[in-house]
Image (cartoon, rainbow over the protein chains, first blue to last red):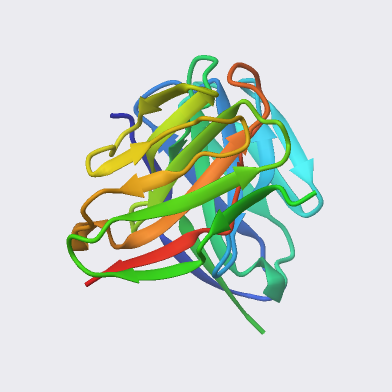
Length: 111
Length: 114
């Protein structure tokens, strides 16, 4: 099946730093989604991208849909302690709702 | 508006026992799905449904059954639990099967098989 490679696997950063993570695929996707998961909870949608080259922001978060449609990037600016969690990318092909998830990036923020 | 509700939140089973994980959504969503989450492997699709009476297999369907008798409910059944099914299970829904609406997740069921 399709695989999404997400990197880095984990990050330890200081409060106030910027964060970048990415997701690459061997297949083309027509939708990219970024989710955040807090401990003990389900993933929560952060940003949805629907068009190659699209750049979308949600507060301090910015995500981009790669031109090749095989990758996506998520940036977090000026990190704060509540940014701690696991960030997942997810891709969708065709028009069905089935998603393929990346393996996640675990973010730790130190004061 | 409760969104996607999963019960129970935690469960411990013995090998060979059967169990049904419940999932309900009150948003009249067409599409519902079940994922399992294991360390280092992200979320993997088990089964999904595009509407009442219609279900299909995902990436890892073996050992699990589903049914969709109503739009609101999508239970996941383990007929004979195995230790390899120890995982966190998430149910998700989205408004339409076809379209750009993203999926919304429940808070998960943490299942341990001894």
